[in-house]
Image (tube, rainbow, N blue to C red; front, side):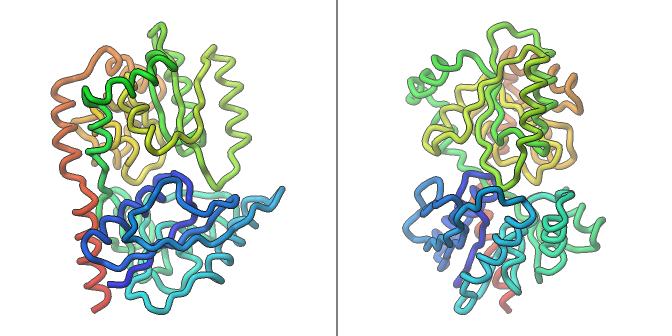
Length: 360
């Protein structure tokens, strides 16, 4: 089949990671796949190399100084709409609300459901749920939200995980790569996803301040985003000073280095207040790192029996302390079994089955 996968960015966000991994898995199954995306800030390619069997179309999207979120959303939609060439594709599959608004007919993956206050973004989000002719959700919990909130039925196809890439980073052969991070950072709790409201960054600060773990640092990686979280970031920085916490903020970490950073962590914190699956958390599990997550239905669905769960800062702190005390053999064994069930090849085959059903 001739398949177009549409994304809004070249940066290493969860939805973009999903898009590339799915595209490559579809191509490995013999499909003809093209990924379309906006090249923000002069980007001419993705944050990592893409399999040669996948065509990539980068639509230039120059920055406009001082542009607010609402106008940037509308310009993103119109730029993709003007560039995208729908003819010749059997399936057009949008991976976010911007790309879903940029085309007239598509399949849409709803990774998670947000509640926006910016009018243009709220309208974009709503249209991207109700207008597509078919929807995919990466977990049953998100599909349930769609059914209860909109009366919409979605096909559940979970993410895969590059388990081998992260488990290799935890192997004896990769000891020196992990050691480089430990020499730089010491012993640390890691969170990947940046500093923003959805990621529960303020609660993570509060939880970390409650820990009685001398010599352990809080490390934050990632953070590329379309939205303006400067006010939230300023609050986070002020609160860190008030709590006497000195986090290490790495920003985006090179694709090839990320597995070693994850594998070298003493614990992985995933305090998000909204998630659809938890891909970064699954990568940590693949690396054998103890996982502490927010007590959300979706994270219980995916990581039950593997993670420690906390519903607030105190609960997260208790589970982080337990994780830092040493790996739980039962949870680790459960984690190994868990990651073996989530492969991108399985996700690709499920998508192909759906595509053929829609095309017929």
